[in-house]
Amino acid sequence: MSIDTRTAAHVAHLARIRVEQDELPALAEEFNRILGFIEELNEVDVEGVEPMVSVTPMRLKRRDDTVTDGGMPERVLSNAPDAREGFFAVPKVVE
Amino acid sequence: MLDLAYEPPKPKVISGARHDWELVIGMEVHAQVASKAKLFSGASTAFGAEPNSNVSFVDAAMPGMLPVINEFCIEQAVRTGLGLKARINLVSAFDRKNYFYPDLPQGYQISQLYHPLVGEGEVLVDMAPGVARRVRIERIHVEQDAGKSIHDMDPAMSFVDLNRTGVALMEIVSRPDIRGPEEAAAYLTKLRQIMRYLGTCEGNMQSGNLRADVNVSVCRPGAYEKFIETGDPGHLGTRCEIKNMNSMRFIQQAIDYEARRQIALLEEGGEVVQETRLYDPDRGETRSMRSKEEAHDYRYFPDPDLLPLELEQDWVDAIADSLPELPDAKKARFVADYGLTEYDAGVLTAEVAAADYFEQVADGRDGKQAANWVINELFGRLKKDEREITESPVSPAQLGGIIDLIASGDISGKIAKELFEIVYAEGGDPAEIVEARGMRQVTDTGAIEAEVDRIIAENPAQVEKARANPKVAGWFVGQVMKATGGKANPKAVNDIVAAKLGL
Image (cartoon, rainbow over all chains, first blue to last red; front, side, top):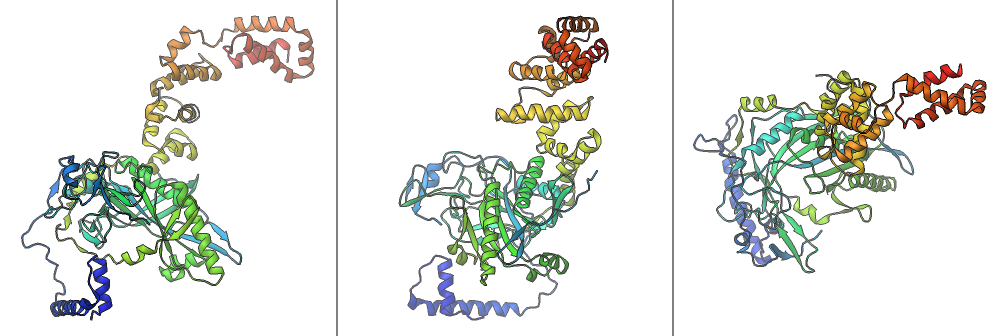
């Protein structure tokens, strides 16, 4: 699989990262190197091997259904560039 | 379990300018899990709180915060699955669905694409007595809800409230088995009913607890049957998805509009483009959400913060054992045990609280009579006052008391309705009210005979008429009832009038 500059621009857009036009070829090249490495891994035969999700035999930790958090709107909003009347205020987004 | 027999309904047919067309509909229903805390954080799920007050740092996606799953939310989703006769997957896993939106601070929604918690099930969608559609469920997965953006508080800014962010949702995905707008609404109604019986979703559509995405396509008659036979979706038309609807009425309007739009397009030689559309209820039309198309590249991948969710069969079995009697079974039992019509049984089982109320009234009494009183008198009266069954001023014991007084002959049906009004407005024990206010029916034939004699003596002309035309006897019955304030036993009056007039 080969990544061209258009795909690189698309990925940058999906990630909402601004990449200037002249930076795209280098970015695409970097993607290709990473994918090349992954393709090498793909050569390993893993037929019939269960994917390993954890190195220790752990069970997903669970929580009880009790309210233990929240009630701190001023702290939640404290890093917001703009907050009004208890809301985060962002540039208008509407369908 | 008892089962009623059903015929499937006929699919809706829309006549285009050239041909007839049928609809094929699949739905994705997002149902908010009834829980106290969110899916992955300890913040409250309460609706209507001050903005951003039910938000933890996990929900706000502060760096370094990690999700910990709320086991009760999983239990609720499993319970829902079991209620839809679905397979429960003992191993499921969470994936990240990546997209940017201001009300999604993580930049991804934690969902289950590859390994959902619940597999295939089915819902029986009642359309009319004896008519129901079996809609297959493809899967149910658990995911996080997003926050809420408010666009009308400021001309230049959108305001974001994260209170709903991270609340657990069940996404219930149906097969394309729904064949018309009415069936779509009935399907959602049935899902809501089952989840309310199970206590897994409050199903309050106004507060957005239940929302649906509807996939609509059209095809020529016969094509759907070929699809069912072969499983090849190539027999069906291209579908459009109408997003995020939370009103039964709008869902039906949107489907109807969308089907007609597609038909017109196809008959003009055009093609339906697979896309996401939004229904605008003010204009009564659907329109394309072009901006969504690019965002469809969600780049799902397994969430590295969460191990797979492994359940024990015993745990699932314990939930299965605790399931309440569900609507279909209850309805069938009401038909069998109380001799009700399927229609009445359906009305009484729509809400579990109403069904419980009815059963208390019917206990030890005639089921049909109890059903008539609950449906016609009580429900009618409650509806007039916009009250729920749980707010009924008349208790099952009081209503039962009224029915007992009719059965014992103490009051007539007409007086019973007056008595019901008194109990509804003032409360009190029905038998005592009848005693205290002298409402008891006069069954004392001597007293009735005296009245009949008096009226016959005072109205010789009417007596002549009655002898010529027995129907006029009704006039005498009416006079007696009037004279006794409606308390005379109508049957006794009829008999005595007929005897005295020699009819």
